[in-house]
Length: 278
Image 1 (spheres, rainbow, N blue to C red):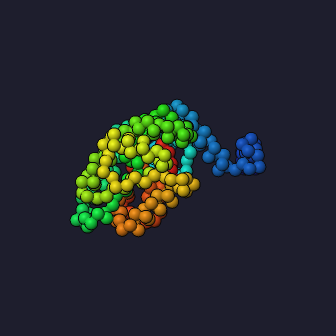
Image 2 (tube, rainbow, N blue to C red; image 1 turned 60 degrees about the horizontal axis):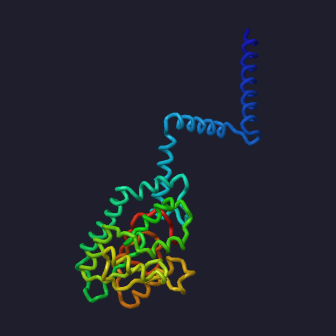
Image 3 (cartoon, rainbow, N blue to C red; image 1 turned 30 degrees about the vertical axis):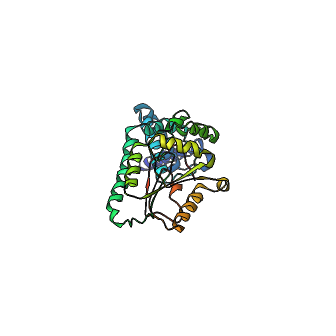
């Protein structure tokens, strides 16, 4: 009796091992192992459950928001286009009250910094503040609305044609801060990645929406065409420092406005995940 029970257990064990081997071969041949097989089954179940419960849409939303946030943190760099699956998400954010609120908060922090350091300004005409232009002072959002919110590869000729129409609206909260800074006697410098042939259109657009009284507008000349924007802007800051200016702050929507030396005492970044300028 004991022998029959032992044989039964041995037979059951043999069949179990054989079953695992057969399943393993079906699941991937010699590269199969039980951990990979269990992981695959778990992923298949998660996909099925996601389809059933509508979680896939939630997962996509989380993925796209994570992508957007990592663009802002400068972890994702040098992208040519917004991922196709995230175009709707980026478009909704850039046209939302959340985008306006995020921009307003950045400007409020800038204003707080300005007020808390006002007593340190020397008032000798050498206190300076730098602004970028596009999506800092002027919004290109109307253009990108027509071009899939960054989902299309940027056509520079097309964008510059739109810029020449001088229809870019002001970013409201930046406009308020601009005049607050100017009212404190600080020299304002605009350092833009726009090209020199756009000077007249840029000046006209800025004045039209309420900006005036800047000390200098720096645009890219022929000698800057093949420079990275980060290097071009750092060189522009270097010239200011060599002229004796103290750069108290920089406001821009791209990390290339801040990177490199000399640096400002503080930098404030506005949100923008439509494009990346290096």
